[in-house]
Length: 64
Image (cartoon, rainbow, N blue to C red):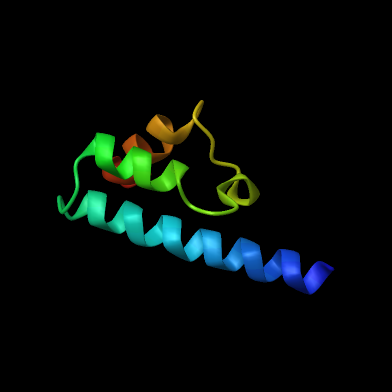
């Protein structure tokens, strides 16, 4: 079971990282990036939810 969870976590993290990079590169706007991140399968494994997704994107844009 641990291998499956790690695989799901890795997949979610990569997909979120790609979306954040698109946001940083101005390929997508904040609202679209937010919606895409919240739609990622198993996004909860990377500790992102509707309460902190704005913060995650703002910190990424600022380089924090």
